[in-house]
Image (cartoon, rainbow, N blue to C red; front, side, top):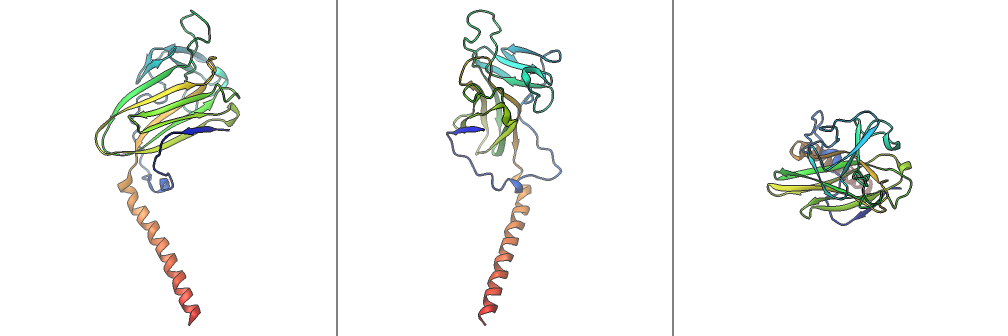
Length: 226
């Protein structure tokens, strides 16, 4: 079961069907959101890094990138790679479970507008106490966490947020829970603009249909009283 601890308020997603321009691929402003770039790795292998293209370590051992369709017992959500942040002790010093909970961050600058932030999550084990991942959009836009079991499969979490002006955004992920090198997996991190102007005609058409239904009901009720 996927569990979330919500610490923020964001706009409801009930209008999401009206917010997608058909036939237009939204630009993903996240650099290397699928973790496919910049790290040379063989199939079914892994490595822990201080930094990879777009991302830098903020705490712990580093960013563990897993490459292949069966590494760590799970297939990536998309592409060939995924990230685990309860990272292996790459230094070979101290306990194997010493400070393995790690974090990573990416900075980007966005203009005024409404955006959708999303990512794919999978618990590596069936122990929810070790699979947790925290995430945030600084400053103060979003602060949340997710955990779940491996049997839940990959799930995509998404949030809408609105900026009133050009803003530096810091995208943060970090491992939560037991430090044992078995944590949650991340893949396909995205921030895309929501094409609201293109959706307004669709939303207006939906309101018109609702108004027509209401008018017809009133007309039938009036006719029944004559």
